[in-house]
Length: 181
Image 1 (tube, rainbow, N blue to C red):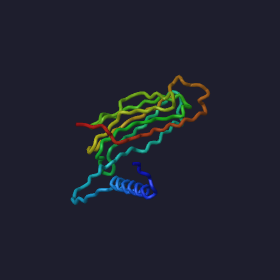
Image 2: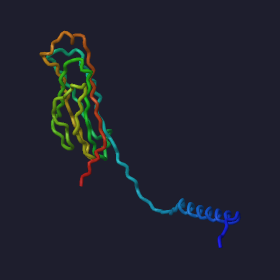
Image 3: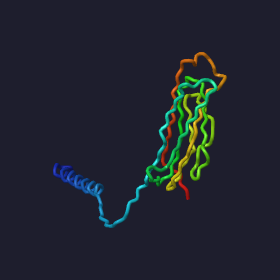
Image 4: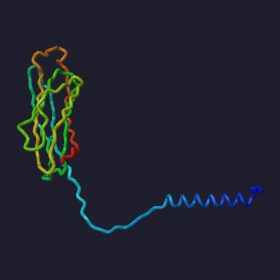
């Protein structure tokens, strides 16, 4: 004997499918919460970094002259020392209108952290980036550097007579993500 699908049977089946779907969806989207009481302290790491303002003026330079600029970077400011270690990089940029040579040198040695080593800068693309500096956490440290700009004696072309050049030094510091055991 064959059962025929009547309108009432179709309605009952649709109602059962709808109820089953609603039941499954409501359990799927259920949110379970629980309340926990307690107390504690949250500690936030203090970030401090500072570098002195530096104006690099290459005006008045001529072949054979040297200008030096001293600057520093530190991990403390107003008596507050950074709670996180920092890595830093220097970027020296120039418009390359004049044939200048650049050299960065650390002043003295660091009592903590890592200073960028002495090196001549390759400015062939108008920019040189030096990395590797590191300031430790919770110990106030000041790293001092000298940027030496030289106009080589043999570079005396007449085209340099009325040229100007702009030199900028940018210090980028960020939290050191190195994990130490």
